[in-house]
Image (cartoon, rainbow, N blue to C red):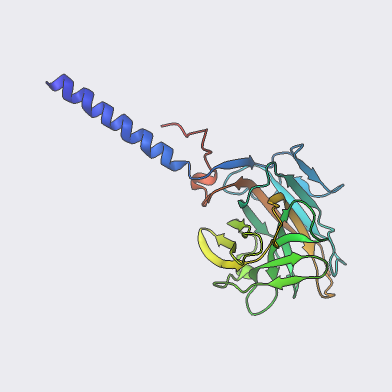
Length: 268
């Protein structure tokens, strides 16, 4: 009887352990990049930038990071900091991008907008089919999504709560952004953003696609765009990205610095 009870207890412990481990994997991962080097396709980059930086204090995931530069003299809609773009197969309709991000000090936020991540829809339908998340000046430097649809059409959305980025320079924080495209012609698209798992932005009425437009999200960019109003930088400044995760479900701030995928469970 004692042996049977012990065996039953072991079985229950193993079963509970398995359930616990499977619950750790919270996201359906498309890709995870630690940025110890620049991976090849489906990633692509602008020539010369961005660069791998192993000298800065590492993020919670450790190692090197992807560094973007806003050069002195940058103004209006300059992409001088470079781009790292990921081409997404299958054009998903609901996408999350999470990453550790860090801004240099000092850092001069553009008064109109300083973009860091883009979601870009596939297919045609206009010269500009993206959703840009970034920071702009004001009483608080707050993350704001900018919807760009067709030539010169921009809509900025207000935030759920403020995030004073200037109070967190030279610090690593987990930024996660989500886009869910709308029913074609409907105002039911979603734009959300979390910083360290705190929801700072949420909109459920965004219109990305017109009637007849079936495009999903074709690519994602980390990009250092400074501009939208003529302000000019007087010195070089930087932002870093590490542990980039693309997923079709919520990722969440990594525990211990890294995220487990659905198919790669952590050891007991």
